[in-house]
Amino acid sequence: MLLPDINILVYSHRSDVPDHDAYRGWLEDALHGAEPVALCGPVLAGFVRIVTHPRVFTPPTPLEEALRFVATLRSGPAALTPSLTEHHIDAFLAACHGGRVKGAMISDAYLAGIALSLGCELVTADRGFARFPALRWRHPFDD
Image 1: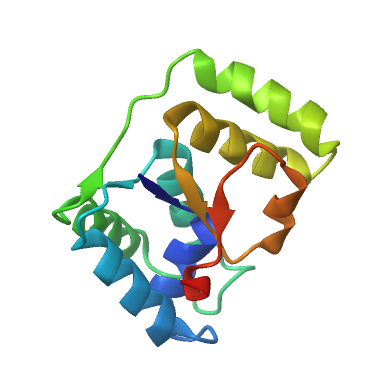
Image 2: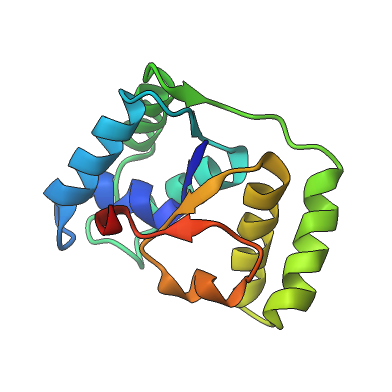
């Protein structure tokens, strides 16, 4: 099962970011592929938070447009929205210790914990996830 990071969704949605077409193509292919694509709540919420923020994008994505994008993603044939269990907290804590994280990296450890607890391969443009030794991850263009 694949778990796209927030950055994959942002780069797929915003046409004003570098490599938008390539990210969008990867995401569309994944959502229509054979392997399930986990769209977890924290990633979807993070996507909406970032693209609608006026200090991140000028102009920001209108909220309704961002929510439509989320709905479109969730309607993909391979998409699923997994429920999180208490095990993701244990995996998060282990990722914090194993990755020796602090500050802004805590969000990455939380996402790593989700991926580990669900048995997912994280797909991200952030190569910093290499700091989590137990995590299976890759850049979408490394296929």
